Amino acid sequence: GAGVSQSPSNKVTEKGKDVELRCDPISGHTALYWYRQRLGQGLEFLIYFQGNSAPDKSGLPSDRFSAERTGESVSTLTIQRTQQEDSAVYLCARGGTAGGSDTQYFGPGTRLTVL
Amino acid sequence: QKEVEQDPGPLSVPEGAIVSLNCTYSNSAFQYFMWYRQYSRKGPELLMYTYSSGNKEDGRFTAQVDKSSKYISLFIRDSQPSDSATYLCAMSAIGDYKLSFGAGTTVTVRA
Image (cartoon, rainbow over all chains, first blue to last red; front, side, top):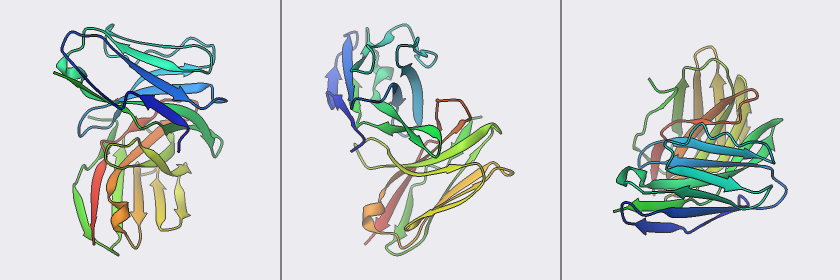
């Protein structure tokens, strides 16, 4: 596989509830990304972690979204006060190298449904 | 206008046919070009990676990049039912870790 596991695989929640999504990459890869994939659309960048550097949060759509990662370990994406438009597949990717440039290897995703 | 345009299809072909997929883009700084395959309810899987212009072949798959036209293609020869999936193009500029994705083209190969 891609060396990235995500949990849960599916999450159904009610509007207004908070959810926490987990990404667990294999060790040895400092770069970690979160993307959102809405039905029939391409992947939207959310946030990027690189080692102990400050994360790039420029893709987070609102302050209801936050993410954490300590070092090269597990990352969690938290969505507070979920809305129906948050329904999507949330994908986590680890960094890799191909031909001298970073590329990304994805986990299976968490399918979030907000009722 | 989206930075990366990709016809969502769907595309349906008989087994053994050549599948032709393409993307256009607007950002001339893009130098790295990738194709991902995504099976239903799975994460995207890196299929092909190319740098700058030119062709790259890997088994039944050929990726082409024409930077002058801002146009990339993926060809699948001797298509198989197992090739049925959504194909996503992605690209990035030098030094930019963010990937810009197309919307994906859904392909069905009929046995």
